[in-house]
Image (cartoon, helix red, strand yellow):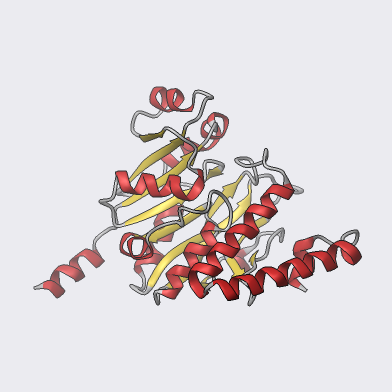
Length: 294
């Protein structure tokens, strides 16, 4: 009887909760949210977690999108904790799609992602092709086709800035998913404990992806689904230096939680040595990211 019930749940459509974290993002909601609401998928709801915005975001949502659920936080929880809060308030879904407020979507993107997720019960999470929303010479460039994580736990967006084409419309296993569009099974999310609450911004998507894989689940890239990303639109006020520091601090936390303090210290020393080498010799000729990938 239990087997029959399990198969029935597996074969039916998945009920999806789309979680969007917002902080003073009224302009982005005006630009992108309607495309999400207009998604052509049979069974989904949207919740916007507002991180104590002061720009009228909540008022705008209530007046223009009455079907969208709203969770109002009294403080800015950041990305991961904001998403965790949204899930805690509305837990009864088969899967959660974490979507940035600076992302717009075509109507069929979710259907294709769910098809991939349902294709194998060992797939724990799925990410789409992420395109830069601004075209170059009338054509779209890839922002991320999933993430490659190096042996030093450094994440790199696959095919970043390459011209989009059908060759990237593949479905394949990858290391990690960009948090801007991250579909995960409920039971998998629950087993991981959700996003690390000690990470305010940056690396939390990589950390969650790696912890999903630690549990024995697979992470998949669904290249026949795509979204459009207003790159850095939701965090452009944070300077490059601060972003790098937040990234490296969260990378340290992730490594420490998974492998212990000695490995975390070793990898931090490696990064600082490489940064110093880049700063003294290569900084005028290439970006830090390019240097670290050598």
